[in-house]
Length: 120
Image (cartoon, rainbow, N blue to C red):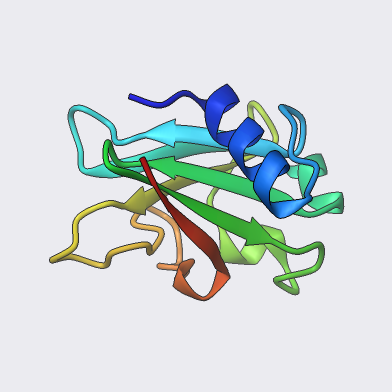
């Protein structure tokens, strides 16, 4: 399985971007639930946020531009103990694929923010 570091290096080399560990979050599909799970500190959303969703044969690169939603706290479930956006993005192609399925979330659809699908 390709790593976060390898995906970032590929994107930076081929797309002329500058992804790094502080502006990019990475997740493999959870073993107990068919989701990509993220906890992203709310202050990270003061700039663009990049998500890398690894599904064994490809990575899905999602870019969430600064200000992509009017109210972060009203759109996503926030973990108060960490002040972090708590996401579970569905990896199930038959059920709400690429939507936030976290209990307490609003079902936000990330499909419109897919920048690229990268085949391994």
